Length: 214
Image (cartoon, rainbow, N blue to C red; front, side, top):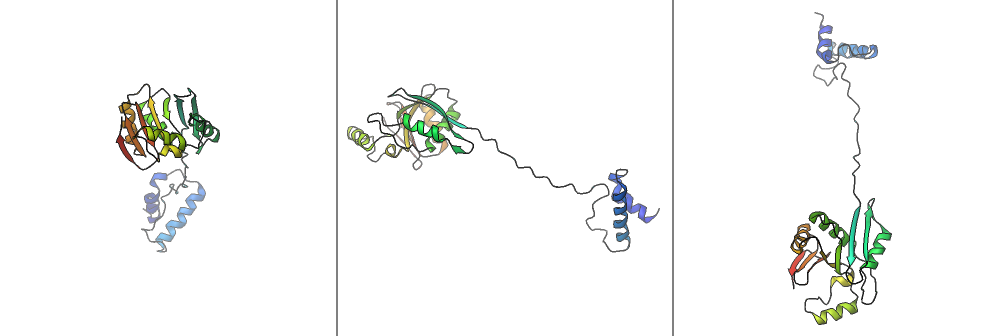
């Protein structure tokens, strides 16, 4: 058999009968160059009918779910369920509304709450599968309120993170307090204080640590 035909069969067996005339001519040129020694047989020549397909890149668009929080201030009975994070950013109106609900109810002072706290609550809710709002014992505390509470109890830090809007004391009505604590500890974010007698878990965005109180 003609050597040119052998080369054609070896290179094009997978694509036989599928080539347009222009491609067949191009293959004749390649085969001719191989026979003349201009291209080594081992060179990377695409098999007949198997031209390299264009590389397609697909930008995988990550679907990021909105984050929401549902809470109730036990002192004012104010409730708020809001999407606080959406489309890669915190929602200003929702954050402002949350600041109001979490204000110091004793003197009506508000303070920007650290948005990382809402992420902690959102993740605790997901871990515990709670369907009820977070009951807020304490959100923001003004310096005056914190001073008064620290004088009453040795368990209130004189320089509490509540004063910076970086801490909350919470519980869930449909989840045992132990599980709320366990979920918070599992996150490995900030401080977690466990107060079984007072029935709340303290969460904050400070250094990672844990403790128990009454």
